[in-house]
Every structure is written in structure tokens, then in C-alpha cells.
Length: 135
Image (tube, rainbow, N blue to C red):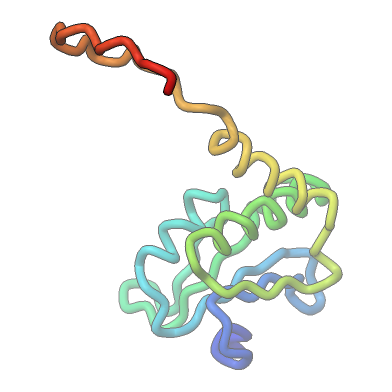
């Protein structure tokens, strides 16, 4: 089994597996558990071979989704992975600029909203300030 992330030195390689329609996300052999967890949180399914003693771990976009939704899942994952500090390469056959930009916008939207304003704590009463005099 070829591991494109190991081959290209990236954290995640997103591509369509040859002779299939399945979108894969390869991670390096030494990928941290946090990366695998994040990919699962982003909607990709984890696979291991051999079972029980993972030598090779990869993720796929769920097969039960139609092809448009599969691309959406893959493209929505990219900005979140980049934001988490991972290097990502996505095959042009999978990458969709509009879907990617929508995902970027969704990630930025919560950060762009101002935090709810809390009233300033009441300050203890102080002496009135002396009147200013103009020279």
C-alpha cells in the first residue's frame, strides 16, 4: 500500500484512489492521534490495516454520500486542518475553490462576531475631579 503523505512529506494527502471514486486522506505513518481524531471529527472514516495492530492508517470520505457531498466533506476539512497547523495537499480532481472558500468563511464567521459585552464592574466612588483651568 502506498502512503502518499509519507511519500510527499505532508500531514494529509487528499486524493481519489486510483480505479475507484473513493476520496482518501492519507496521513504519515507516524501521524499523531490528534490528527486522526480531527479527521474523524471532520466527517472522514478511519481505516486501519492490519486490524488490531495498525501499520497503516488512512481515512476516507463516507461512501454512502453522493459525489457532490463527498467533495464538500473533503474541501471543508482542508481549512480546519490548516488552522490546526497541518500541511495538506489536495488533488485538483478533488479540490473545489468555492467549497473551500465557504469552509474558510464558516471558520472565520464565529471569530468575526464581537464577543458579548459585559457591563463594566462598578468602580468605587471617588472624589470628584478638580475643575480644569485653561491657562
